[in-house]
Image 1 (cartoon, chains in turn brown, cyan):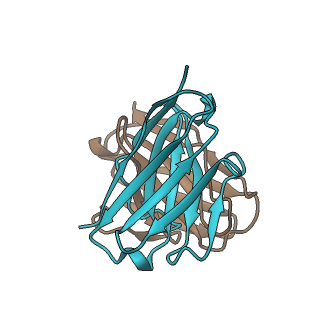
Image 2: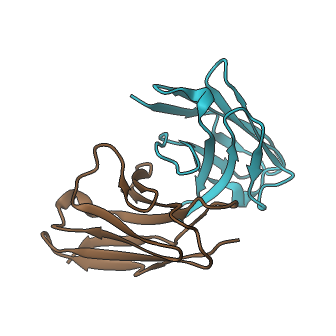
Length: 107
Length: 115
């Protein structure tokens, strides 16, 4: 199974900050990497697929990059609605696996 | 608009069974793989199962293999998750999602396994 290691597990940031979350795969997943946002009491929402392709309606302050085993999600100009938990996921091979999540809260 | 509506969750005793359904609309259901993901209370996401568009291939997590099965009815735009021999550690919110990249999610249905 491919292990996904996400870091940090939590971070505190201020409005307007730029934050970066990293996801490392235990083996190469090409560009089959997705990012999700989840707010308390709600279902996850897809932000990015194929490493860097924003889903429809996702603000351009979200961006994804990487390839192979190292990936990142960057949120520039952090907004109030961005405080949430973020997960990476590889869909290169089964079983599909997720990172442990990164909680972003207000400093 | 893509919509997914899960149903069938509830309280069940250990060893019991449930069938979850996910009704889809707003996209060409028969062209898309469908995925089930679960989330135990306070925990992260866990992939459960994926079924290919024509049901020609199904995949199950080791934690549910032999107990759960996945199927779909492309004439009704519904995907099912049949869960047997349920255990306490199957307690979770169960979500269905479109594709292996899970581009759209339903709101989930809660399964509680307890005596």
